[in-house]
Image (cartoon, rainbow, N blue to C red):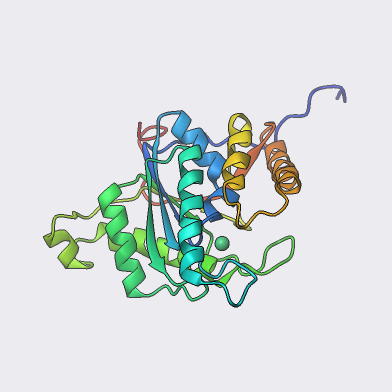
Length: 255
Ligand SMILES: [Zn+2]
């Protein structure tokens, strides 16, 4: 054995790409802290993406006298700007209450309506099984609730015409989502090479000006995390996701 050979990456970069994908997030900025690099990479390769924000982040501040509705409006504007930078086709705000998101039937119906309208091959959402992060810290209750709600909307509700039958009777036919990609997971099994779009992810994050107070320090942290995940696949930067295949493909990718 020689020791001067280049290091062989532990795994290959994730190659499957959906034609259409939907990111379901609890708050404005989750999608940018989460899978923005994957979204931008897929969009650049020809995918069409849609973002759903369950809340408008009306508790995302420090001032108990602040007007939550004004904050929500401000944050929706920031999210629209970030969404444009990443290249999503659009964003839907469900206007659920920040800090009080519940995986209930009302939210599930809203998500099924979104899924059946946009008809994505893949849905990206927070991993609901993450309660405490590996590196320390608690995963926000809304992140867990939106993750559970996304999973439950994808399977079985969106694909079952008898689930919320008024939707199908009203023309929103059942739809099969082929894959889930869960972000902020302790069990990642897929790493997407985001080297080409790292700057865009950081620019999109910086659009959340009400939330980000030291953009330079944040950029440094985001680059460090990306580089760490990239090592496994021999890329300059990657995002780690937990991929759950619901429907197998005959070929690599639907497109
Ligand atoms: Zn959040």
